Length: 218
Image (cartoon, rainbow, N blue to C red; front, side, top):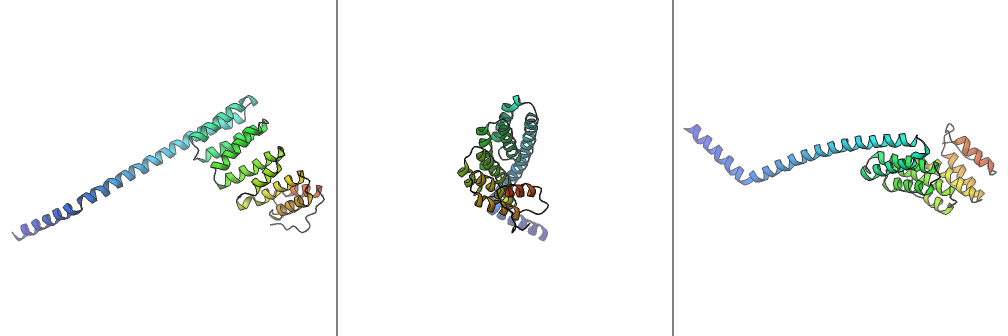
């Protein structure tokens, strides 16, 4: 009998507890289950998007390697990747590839548009690459002030030598030789002795009468 009373007391306590906290517990469980389902859906969606973006990017690479007649196809595929999968690395790579294809086809307007897309939507590394390349296109267009303004923007530290080198090219084109020498010397100072671009920068510096005698290899 004592056992029955104890059991009834436990049941009563449980009922009181459930009446007080039951709804809260149910909502916590529901939210947890919805969160788990949402997380699985998001992961599945990300995997599917990555697979689709990868397939499209492969098509773009094939088009880039094709005939000049494929130039429009390259831009169309790049546009599809950017609009549908803009949050993936494939979109950033597509923008850079499409920009190069357009530049090679002497379509500077499209090249600049693709590079600007990468600057606006890419991560810090892709932004740095796109800014450098866009500055090169602006140099070809003799838009020197725009190119220098672009190079004065934010870059990752590992691009310091390339930025200084590109500034030297622009300043040389403007016939601002003292400033160009300083830029090339800054580029050399950021490069190790084994850097593959070091010899070219030194040649450009020598061509405008500099020696970089005080430049130290990084």
